[in-house]
Image (cartoon, rainbow, N blue to C red; front, side, top):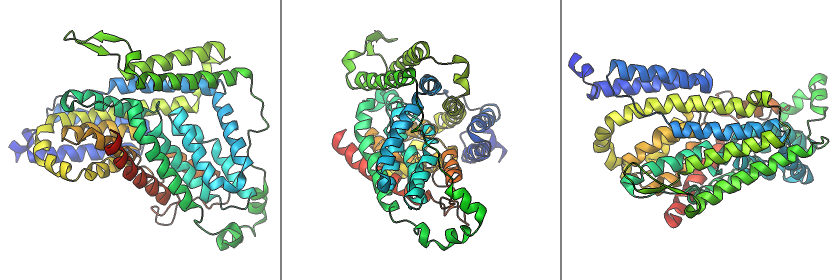
Length: 461
């Protein structure tokens, strides 16, 4: 037994290492994204110093890309450019209040696609709730699916950390599989797949729950004068606010930067080439392109759009983004250390199974995403393993939607915020926790995205 423990590649040692990894993930989620990254460091240290595994590679390129994108988006937020985008979205929603259950998720999805993070949609929740209430629509219908759709938008965004990570992982593996997909190629599959899931979930939500005037629980609560008065209060709105021209300029700069990223990703010839270590000419990687473009866009917004540079680091987008950096850092480094040490054993024992049932990869990705509460962190940890086990890169792209698994339990900040903004209490966590408002819209979105994405990937890639 002692000999098995001393041999880091023995079956007993591998099981213990897996237990340590899962324990670090489960404990880390109790302390949020920052805590997840820090506590993953404990698992990493144990595997290196106790089991003697050589440390893997931290995902430096991914982390630097996150920092560049978040820095630009946070500068946009401080310039009030995000408020301008939210105001435009509100105009669309209030112009068609009877279609709020369809338009709300499409709006939050599109905002995430543009900004690369689902954390930009918090302002939309009280607006969606107010529109639904005034139209007599059960707020749970548009709000729950709007929350899950915001996270689904990450899998369709050209500047999201998850998309950039997926493109980088496949590119790094190109030396083995001889296949590399650009961000536009990935989005060619991911956008219609993600959008299909959102639309189907919205259609299902049209008839979920009882109308407020027929909901006995709500009507009972309305007998309380204080609750009734709270419901009657006017909701939040951005329509009456006037933003300076600098805020609108910031939006133009940010959207232009996204367009540049997409164009440079679609046309390789536009990117310069440089010799690698072997003297072979290589195109500038999209990771570096995104980092450069986002740094420049952030600088232009900072200089020309009247930004208070001292407050950029205090914006919600910056805080959420830097938390993601730490989460990806710890989780990915710990996971890479384990899998690099045991990849040969995993290939021999699991390679045939995964190739025969590639959907097993999607299930693992979904579960890990829930454990780490991050699509990017889950992809960085699991996608390289899938490629190492021989899964076709097209299958990896097709199952991109499975990276959103944190709808399973209502612990994600956007879901909790959505519940808090629903004054009626219809958007809620059920008695058994798992029966919450987001579970079915999330499941419909992810399942549909994986099915549509898998079909498109085989046809288009």
